[in-house]
Amino acid sequence: MSSSGPKQAIYENLAQVAQALGHAHRLELLEHLAQGIRTVEELSARAHLSFANTSRHLQILRRARLVETERRGKHILYRLAGDAEVITLIKALGRVGERNVAEIGRLVTDYFHARDALEPVSRDDLVARLRDDLVTVLDVRPEDEFALGHLPGALNIPLAELERRLGELSKCREVIAYCRGPYCVLSFEAVSALRARGYRVRRLEDGYPEWKAAGLPVESVA
Image (tube, rainbow, N blue to C red):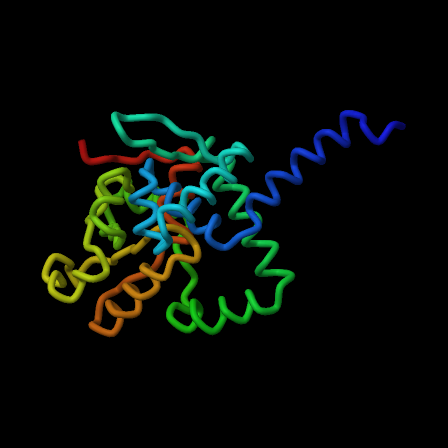
């Protein structure tokens, strides 16, 4: 069979997608875009990269069809090109890494499990608890990310404000915290801080993007 057949063409294009994922900055930019649509300026500030560097990484992601753009006035806005597919791809990459790369496994154990050794709450479990009004869902992402989209009925207290806003949480009600995704430290830090203060709190198994990608209901601030 010719090496230029359809299978080879597919593999060559898949290799371009894989190459686009092959940089830590681009993976982080995808995590930020999984929260919602963003300008280059916003992404640059959140990823702590220069505007030029951010633009270069976004162009690579765009060529691989992992992100797409739209123009609003003077600004170019970026979004994921298929939320569910891109988020599922990144999640699969994480699972392979945790299983096969010793350094990733060590970091997950030493940092994440050290802060929260309890089994996280699954999405299905949280859906049932929300239906029965049994928990307070706590979103510890920044306010602007919460405004773009969040779990139904979630209370937004960004991690930096948690200490002074503890009065908004009842110790008589279990709290389920979530943030940007499985490797976002915000929910782990929130769980650790709240448990130290006597709250019954657990963490959602992943974050807002995975919840949305699963087709579960979300809300946004108009």
